[in-house]
Length: 336
Image (tube, rainbow, N blue to C red; front, side, top):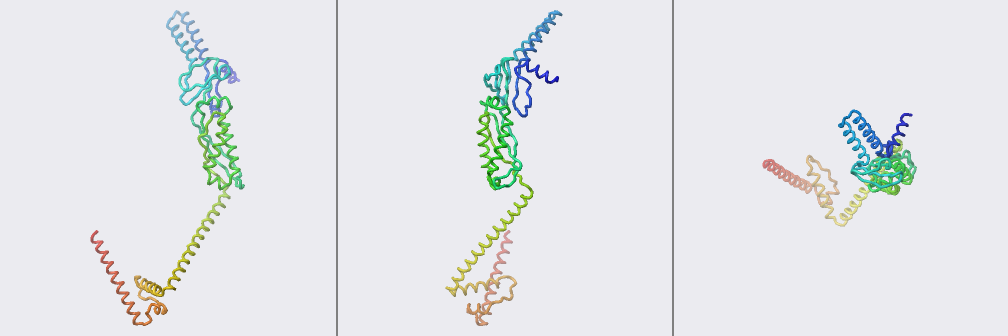
């Protein structure tokens, strides 16, 4: 009861009243009437005491102090990040910016609002997307009051902070409900921009500007997350199998083209077989090479002596090439 009496008494003495719920309203109210009362009391008491004891120092000191306090009642300081709206006798008078401003004690009610950018968190819990997937969305909203429209934020809505949160949450729910789950995951920027546009159209009536909307997190049930992980794994395996099959088809087509070339050109086929034989002998450690007899006949090596002579000459060529390679390596090592 004592608190109520005190608040009522303060409201009567000042042009405003003690602000309440600052964290939600974000509006401060400045009063000045009590400065006048205090200044007058100091003047009366100081002059009275000074005359009673015949002390001019007390009298002049109280006079200076009282007048200073009364003058301060006509002045107010607005910070750089604040804007003030003056209501004179309950009616809108003007909006003022930062610096020292004037006011009329008792007649003016000063409402001050912070124009710095604010961040608000909001979410939509257990919402169903268009394809009936339950999701919980965490998002943040960045907004601020337009400098020259602080009047609208104060006079057009009772609690602009709470109002913009409700509009943001409703807009998010409507947007998620009309979107597919895959779009919610892959098209966040588009959803953010769409939500921002809708909120901005509403907030402009309250003198507010929406600077950004961002979906931070999309939460789905654990069982659905496991199912999606298995589906993604299956999709990756499917893609790998398709790629492998396509490569097999491509290789088979190239083999078919090569077979047609060899069929039309027996000399090329014989050279290819000869090259394959050379490569098999070239491999280090291959002392025995199995060659089909029909391959030897096709290369003109049906005679055993001819075949042996060819193999010996091939081995010598391989040995000479290996010797040259070893010498080259030794020279490189020596130069280093």
